[in-house]
Length: 320
Image (cartoon, rainbow, N blue to C red):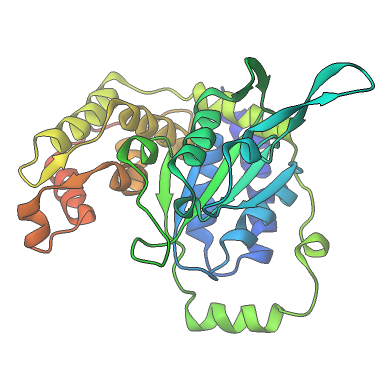
């Protein structure tokens, strides 16, 4: 992948997408960029936030801007795995069983409040995320490409919520928090309400093929052996840190590499530098790390520990 291709094809496409999404989601430019990075890296996104801050609007805006088939499911305790994956029914006229697709059979799936549903239903979705397919009654059905999940969860402690196990959290490439808008952004939100819906304001400026092209380009982004060692050293530091009980998994290390490649790509480079790794480290690693009891009692946060690790891990000097 040449830098000319990045400048003439990748960056203009990325800018078109982000500019359209910004029309619907005001004041959250960094979150929009990180979600696009996650999509380019081939991962799924977990939004951990309170209700009403625009998570659904964000997912819908991305689906519209990228011309992706979009479905949303509200996860409640009575949602069954078959609601997600689909089921087979007997057709009397044909004398055969027919597959009825579930909600996940789309390109962009918004799994709303995933921590309110049963563990079995959560597992059905997470298996689809991992495999890119669903198996119903012994028959495998491939999901569209790209297949992107944006899952939301309310903070633990909200009524009816249960924590996702560490093994399930690990399947999300990043965990992001939108948070409340600042005063200027909230004023802009108030002024924009009542004018037009997302369907009228967001133009379709990219396609599924554009996303797949950007993914292929990201996989070609060069990583120097010194940067590989830097990423591995950060992962190793999380596993030996005196305040960490559970460090970054190998899957997390791969996610950090993929996100660093996507970051370099959208910064106009065909190679990764340590700053790309540092930029995305917290979003990739925080939900994968568990502090020990001593750290929690001291009021230390995962982000504090990651900043310490980032500061202490020597970064190679890569010329650019």
